[in-house]
Image (tube, rainbow, N blue to C red; front, side):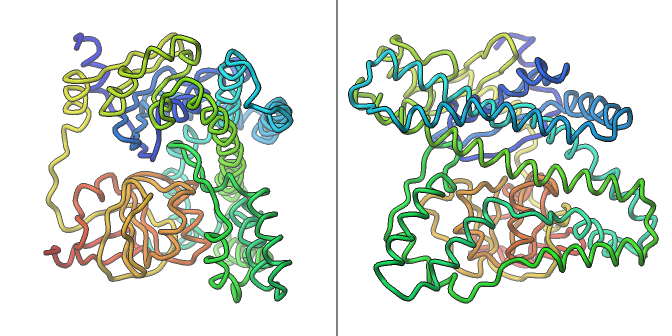
Length: 473
């Protein structure tokens, strides 16, 4: 590797772990560059690594801190800045929705190959737009959470109460797409007529068939899969948002919180809701890209799991001759991405890059600190899961992972607690853990390295502490 490349790898990076592939994840990530067109600021570079559909995305701390300062300044100048920006974001999604309607009307089997390539580039652009200017969320939330929590601690009696207040006052009081999906399943579960219930299941798949997608591709739903889930929804209660609002108001009055601090907490809540909306548009973009990739795979006789290792800009006739290149990337690849280009490293360059990025990999400690995302206590056996598909996860185990995504949901519902390397209060793990009412500690940085499957661990989420009580056999 060139000396300048090594210097880039040695910088301080914030890591997010995904089940993901270059085609989908890098389409989404590049929104950090294109947001400059609309907002006047954006990210300058990313690093990505992939191996067999497990991906990592590295944010530069320089970028996060710089952009956080810009966003904070914009909010101070214009208190309505985020609302106006979100309204622009929603307008920008309209072209994507129009594209999806167009694709739904096409008979892809008879579409010219050149049109398939063009449509894939357009759906990749839609995924990029799905993140779009909402990519400011990471820069603000990941750098401001601790500052706001520190300010909140002045009004609490101890760390535990600070954590409880922070989680309560940043909990969303609007339905997420996960809530909407679950409400639909609760209704279906309580339908007594078998034929009507079956039709409702197909309606659910048509409406929410994208919710289990990921940056790794589409997760196809089946009628039998949904039918098997229904018993667990029969007696499930809906989230009482009015109760949460009431608890928030009581907490603000009890602790005499200043409105300036309350407004900062509301910004985190606002971004959590926005991030959920963003996730929906990302997963829709993946859905339509996958439909087109499936058709292209048949045409050019390259398996879809290999095609996903193409990167933005490669979706053209030359792809037919790139099979061996794409297969090599799937075995392990590293990407340094800037607004101008993406440099790809495989083979020994990939391994060399990983060694530099993961220079603190070997960890043997028994106590881990993170941030509380959902309060509570759990004691149980750990299971480290990086790729959820086909994971042998038992009910009551404690889920240890880099970062959760919608495809982790079946595992999260079985877990007695969740611990992640990365993420903030706006992360998927935090949102879902609160909805499931199970303990969750996020942002530990080292959980997947310090904890092994089978370890007996204690999760004290109120304090943000995870203790290894006994090493597994």
